[in-house]
Amino acid sequence: MANKLGGMNNSLEEILKLIDGLNLLHEGSRYGDLLVACGKEAITPLRNYLMEGKPSHIYQPRQKAVIALADLGAKEVLIEYLCTPKDIADPVTRFGEEAVENTAARLLAVWQTDDVFEVLLRSARKRILPGIIEALSSFRRPESIPLFIAALMDDFSRNAAENALKLLGKQAKPALMKLLKNDYRAETKNPSSLLRRRSIMRLLVNLGVTGKDWPTIKKMFHDDDPEISTLAARLALEITNLKQKKTIIKRLIRKIPFANWSIDEEIEDCLAEYYDAAKKEIEEQILKRKTLPINEQTSDSVLKILLNVQRRARVG
Image (cartoon, rainbow, N blue to C red; front, top):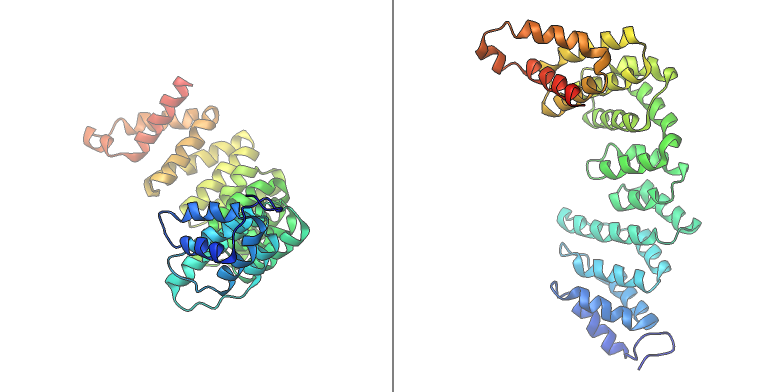
């Protein structure tokens, strides 16, 4: 029989047995559904299980408790959990508990309210987790931009941060351009800073640039990193005149022998997109390289890419 809160009539003992069932990895989800069917009476026992229970590298039972609490509308419990400091020395256990926190953050984002946003923002300032970044991104509020940019230096959260900045679109661009200028001036060789610059360049390709961005983009074109300089060239092709485009195209072609396969694809796409400006240089380079011995032609990465571009232009 259903109780007045919309759940089933269950004693505390029965609810605790269902919570124990969360530990059955292959059946835990079913027990989570049964707990949700118990209604609001299950919230306090679930809260105690989550807050007083011991984190483990086997995180799925605690994750299912979080999901059940979200389904029961227990926003305050999820906030309490996310705000509670967790000092976990063991890295494997800490990784497991972070998976639970990521789930809690994503589910909290269902409530698009100021208090949830502030909790997520405070949590992100303490530690960067992809789930928190994803949850914050759903609000699309510019206050999150500095945190998203900081997350670009974190290997686990970088993709989430890039997606978050894409969602913010043009709102994020001034901060990205400012950081790009500062990084270049600092001439930093920090690996994390390099990865962040790459992310920013990829984001700018998505967001687009204008003529006023040219001084910064021009400097990036001379960056030692092949990916950054290639992406800068792609951006430069959007905002420069025909004469400058031809110069950039020549430099792009010269980069091919020193680039890896992903950069080769980027260069090929650039040349295909701006084929009208690149056509003369491509044809001249193909003619020149076809005079080489056959064995050299077959191993010539430049010739291969230029022929691909020419083929794409004809098909297109």
